[in-house]
Every structure is written in C-alpha cells, then in structure tokens.
Length: 329
Image 1: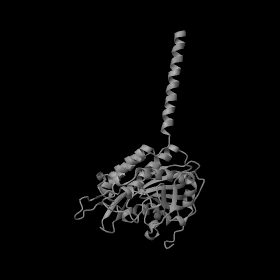
Image 2 (image 1 turned 90 degrees about the horizontal axis):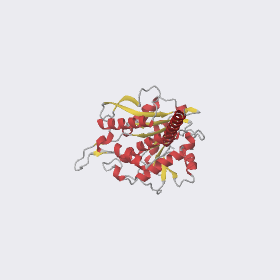
Image 3 (image 1 turned 120 degrees about the horizontal axis):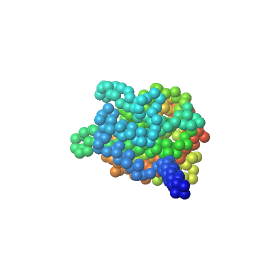
Image 4 (image 1 turned 90 degrees about the vertical axis):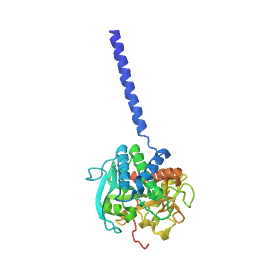
C-alpha cells in the first residue's frame, strides 16, 4: 500500500509540474514586445528584390500580400466583417493604363472588450512602384523600403504587440492598403464600405525609416491642427524621451497624399506618422529606396512610440475630436 501511495504522490507531483511549466510557457507568449530583430525581418522581406517593387496587380505584390496574411494568421488576428479571409478583394480601372486590375486590402481584426463597437485603424500601404526600367540605370526594381515597407513593418509589429498585450478595450483593425501609389485606391475602396461614425481614430504609418529634421527620437504628424489626435499622442509620450511634432512640410499637402485621407474625408480623426525629411530625401520614389538605407533603431523606436502614444485611445480613455477636413485649410 505504501508503494502505491508513493506512486500516486509522484504522479501528482509530475502532473502539477507539467501544468506549472505550461503556465510559464503561456506567460512568456503573452509578453508584449517590439524588437529590432523582428522589425528587420519584416522590412527586409517586404523590400526584397523578390517582391519586385510590389506594384499593384503584379506577382510581386501578391507575394507581399501572402506574407502579410501569414503574419496576421501567426499573430492570431480574426477576419474582418463578412470576409472569409484576410483579403478585401476588388477590381478597379487604372487611370494610366486603362486596364482592369484586381487587388486586395489585407485586413486583420483584434476585437475590443468593453467598447468593441468603437474602432481604431492602424494602417500602411504595401504597394509601391514595381519595376521601372530607365536608360542608364542598372537597378530597375523600386523596392520601396521606406515607402512603405517600413510602415507595413510597423503595422505587423503593432498587431503582434497589442495581441500579446490583450488590453485593447476598443477594436483594432490592422490594414495593409493596396494601390496607394495609384491614388489611394485601396483606402478609398475601404472607406466606401464603412460606417464612419464607429471609427474613432486612424493611425497611419508612412516612411518611418529615417532620422527626421527634428533629430533622433522624433516623428511628425500630418494634419496636426485638424483634430486633437496629435495632442493626445504628445501627452502620452511625456517622459518617454520621444517627441511628436506637427508636419513641417505644409507645401507638400501630405495630409491628403496618404491613406489617412480616405478616412479623414469621412470625418475620422485619421493622421499619418512619418520620420523622413521628405524635402531632402534623395531616395523617395527612386530605385535607391533599399532596406540598407534605413535605420532599424529609428523604425523600432518609432513603432514603440506609436504604441505608447496611442495607448489611451485604444484603451478608450481618450477619444480624438472629429477631423476638420477642408482641404484648403
């Protein structure tokens, strides 16, 4: 009898130890981090020659779409609305070629808790210019590392971060928009199918791979004066060593040149974060926009700042004012 009792005791200890080990593993999986290794992996994959510049409607952008889909699946995001998968597929006519192009926005959702009917969008465009052959130019692949593989990298990193954190009271939509370079095609299509009153903020990431004119650990925000979104971010960044500034490039009309505009025109306080000194950037829309030209620390720290800066909006503590959309303002 004593031997049998001893066996039961050992068996109990073994089972309890397994359960505790399992708990430790689960706890480790829930750690919310944004690290430069993962950032570099996403960036170099999306901006590789294998993606052929990710021009909308080409095999190259299809490879990028599959990569983003697979990452959303690994993270554990749900599909949006009535979609059967992460793709919001549609067809449009290209104004330049007059051809019909079928393409997809890639959308994943992290449902909120107490305020799940209030939606925050975190977005970037995953298309670029593709292959452009010019006389005397050896490199014809326009990789679009900064524009906007860097932004998509941010979307993927933030999706993993907020999923692991698990504290979002509001629902978060993570969207990789298509056709931005052709005229905000993907985000415009997305905007046509939403109830804008349910969307409380748009967080768009565009060209976050270079040190801004304001110096290290800074970023700038388009349309800063059009809502109090930027002021909320500034408040949340106090004490972090990272600063957010208003867009210093007003003459470029950048607020209406990125995907945030498609939501902003519907009244959503949707703005774009960027770090690039666009007025002097020699790689903008050039074949030289390669991953090697970007600063992994800048990208990583900016993504961390976006996570911290938008925290109170995602938790439901702060709600930005609706955007002022007059384009001549």
